[in-house]
Amino acid sequence: MDPRTNPFAPGAGATPPELAGREKIIEDVSIGLHRISYCSIRCGFF
Image (tube, rainbow, N blue to C red; front, top):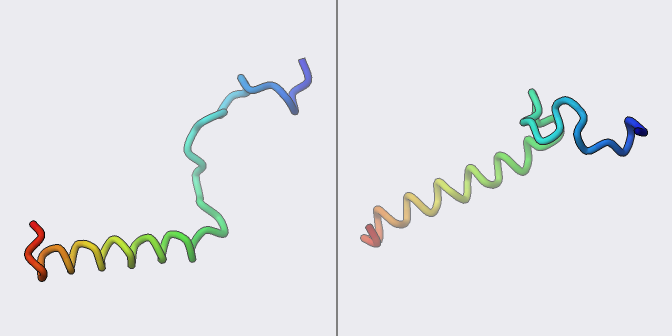
């Protein structure tokens, strides 16, 4: 089988050791989650 198209290659579906190039996305999600939790506590939703 062609190793480039083999979906059963070792490591397929495994979490990568580093999320290279995703710092902006991770930071944006972190800020959004912080805002949601802050507003939920401050506004009395929880």
